[in-house]
Image 1 (cartoon, rainbow, N blue to C red):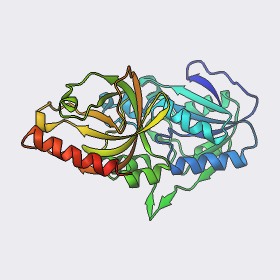
Image 2: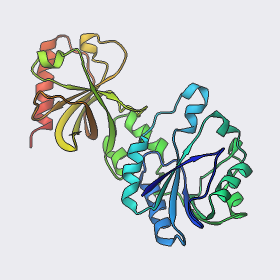
Image 3: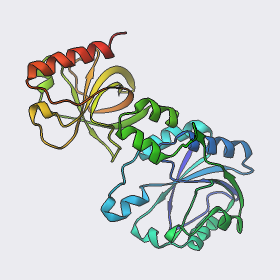
Image 4: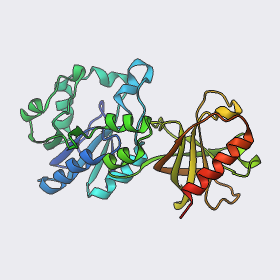
Length: 296
């Protein structure tokens, strides 16, 4: 899958005729996957997927409510498994918000788009004026119904809501893969080491959605190698660590090493974060958590 960078003030076509899947694809969840599979099956021309380099919400209200499920690297990694020919990455800024629906159509025409694959809720242009019917005036358009599971729409927002209340199993089932975050390893307060459970402290590389504060069964990928792990997400209330959340990862087979980066998959919610009366109580609970997570 070839990456093509798109800038709205400098558009040039890369192929003569193009089939294009449109969307932001945050999470690349089951609904997105069905859309991509359908496009791969029916596309009449080389197939590209167009996504944006940042959430549109990040350009509004100082970026509030712009947490993401997948970084650009995550999205590319997942989408590359579906046989798409081109990955069109549209770089946007605040000027992008002023593009009309007609302006956006003109961009697609300059890219030699001949057919478009979209979900029925796709909207575009200033004020979200553009609809699937707008596109039908210019291109062959294939509109997919939104995927529903148990009478609930599969959407990025619904998945975020599930993560925020700790329903990891449900979120993962809608994603079609385990929720994953990535980042760099940074120094922590080393409290875990003092009580016999050394941790790797993960600084996220992007504005990922943080799951509910608590303890999780996880898989940590270090240099591409998976390690069963237990992870605490939260503010460590027992040691009054402040209100800035941290992600602390304890590996089943921990070894000191020069670790620089880590990706983390969330498998299971173990318990909510609790403030204990002492470090001894915290240590006792961690021992119980570790036995539960590493029992196999």
